[in-house]
Image (cartoon, rainbow, N blue to C red; front, top):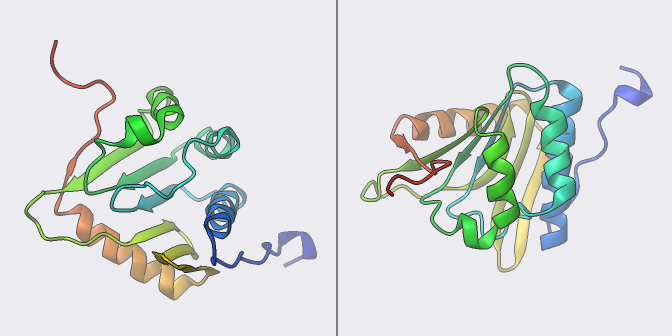
Length: 167
């Protein structure tokens, strides 16, 4: 591995800015590694910087590559239009590669806050009061997170339609 192939060090997650940096680091790693799938998991995505235009640009760079899929899992997506209106609008253009999933309301599932790709990249947030988490290149941890999310997805339903049903 050459010096240029070495991924940048994972940022520390000890603040909202640290989580923001870790999220960008994970997306950048997915772009450079040519990851095919990114999983974003959170109960409601309220602490995520999803309305940031630069973040949208990073996701577009990744999604333009063939065969990419961004999977979001939340307990519900009802607050997304209010909390993240720019992301909601951006998602409409990318609905063919952005999926939203939610567990059944009575499932009793507690969702972690994490980002994981199909390789060794993982970002896990343990809490926001105080902010603490981990971002790492760790194949074993990433595999465990993917297994956790894949098992969860088997108990989820498609959610967050691009256009709500009705008149």
